Image (cartoon, rainbow, N blue to C red; front, side, top):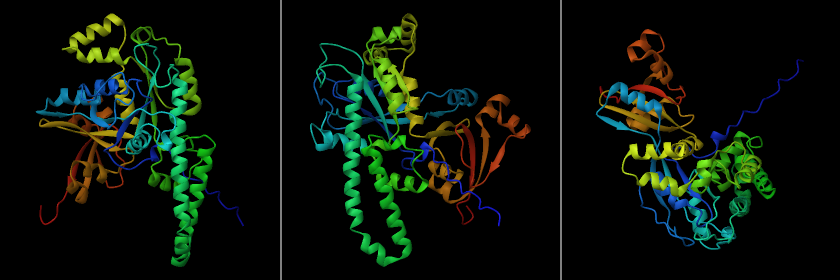
Length: 402
């Protein structure tokens, strides 16, 4: 007999973690007085979030839309000169500061952790500036100590949550046995996954760093649990203006080494909160640009917003014409009917086909007519996975002759 073919496990990508939705949120997380609310105000280009030099200044979370700068969108607008323009955005949530013991309810711990549970990605705001006028919850500035505290609290909360899930799950063993072999098998598979997750967390590791450990079945359960350490992260390092402009800071090397070891692949974005706030308070873009040129720097906000957007595995497709150019936001992996449903539920129900141009082809050839003439205008069916930057025209049928 020929040898049995080796069954290859499906490759699990980090984008598979998380809920399937386009209304995803990124939470600003950090110790008290590291600059979360100042960053929030700058991202939202408003001053809705209270700032003050006191611990737990932010109690109730507030959220805003931070609009994504996109050269593709700008090019489509320049081509069509539409009556309406609608950019993509990411929803940013300002969350209360955390202290050690939060997983046991210390400070505003329980509220803090529940607010993190409701977001899909985390922007860790790290204080890398010393200022005697701005108090620190631990008295001294040490961003690596702070991030270790936060990550430890998130893991401890996840461990507590999972142990509670296991206890509840075991009570259903008898019911699973009496239903059917299939029910019992699923019950056993979930218990195995739960034990595997707890062992991983108790070893001091975050769920998001175990993508070579989790099977597709594990991922199905993980996405139901919504664990804090499963959420993708980025690291915003708040420095003083002098350090930001000279691109040097005594804490950066330690932060870089920590992220490389504990959150590999995550973005580190240095910025100066007070400087970015000053820029936003200027009346004109020309005034802002002049200041940036004088200081020989660029604003960190566009990179921060774009990173937050892609971190939670969002992509854009576009609809474009003289009436409107719009960036539609979907989760990576959406099929054409799901993408159509983002525009209107009827589009998904009555989906016939998607007429698709890649943005790169459209820009290279210059017009829809040229794309068609070049044979690069495609008709795609219901199994087509929409790609970032697709320009799409949907055809659908409502039925009853409509």
